[in-house]
Length: 346
Image 1 (tube, rainbow, N blue to C red):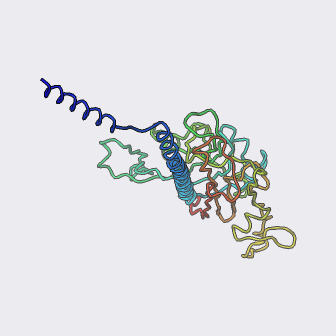
Image 2 (spheres, rainbow, N blue to C red; image 1 turned 45 degrees about the horizontal axis):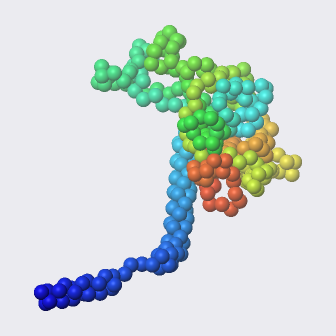
Image 3 (cartoon, one colour; image 1 turned 180 degrees about the horizontal axis):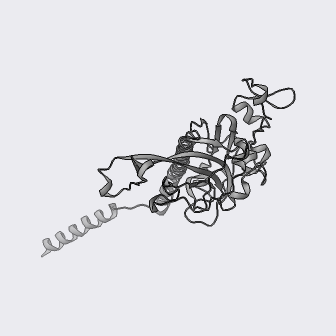
């Protein structure tokens, strides 16, 4: 009995010793650990946030630059078919010297307009001039010998500022409008085919009446009542005079198109013309005469069917509202291209 009691007592003493050796973190130790973790994690978290923000901006810049270049390439391919390009006076002039009043249905501000020859693939039978037969895309016409046909179309590029449209940004965008002729049956002199009707409101230019090409084109009286096709979004919408937005100098277009002025202030061309072929040099109108837009404009020489297009994007508008131009910022990519129209009037 005595030995049993001694054994129990010894066991309790061993258990009490083990319990005394078991310890945990004190409150002070936990607070110190939390502070140290915060001091390490906070800078790392800030670094990650900045890295993600920078990456987002770089992605926006890269995408915007690519979009600007793609838009210029598209406009260049379009302009290569031009037979006549309106300069600033022809585009924004009055009834007597421009077509601005005939572009009332064009959304936004028209800043580039030109006539071109448009190809309609496999549109007419090879004996069209004799029998006036049209071709279509139906399976029945797949084996027919069909030829391409050309019609004239008027193309207008307009700058539309952002609005309440949920499809587009709050920045500006470039839209394309096109109105084109149909195919006339050579036997009836009418638009016979339902597949090749002219655009509603289309009217072809009239080169008769002894007018010059410029006068005839500026006297065009049709309309471009067609829905827009947006070419590119996120065009800089910052107005000139804000944040040092660049504005072209008076002779910006002349220098860009390789021209200069003589002592009388008129455009001096390298090739001299015979006396009877001379005409008053036209002014190459650009943004100094239209100071509300500097992010998209064209320098145009109608005599040579030559144009230089300028576009400035706004990458920051992809990630924040109301982003405005900042001088020397890499997030407002600029692109230019010079195009020589190769089309001709038959």
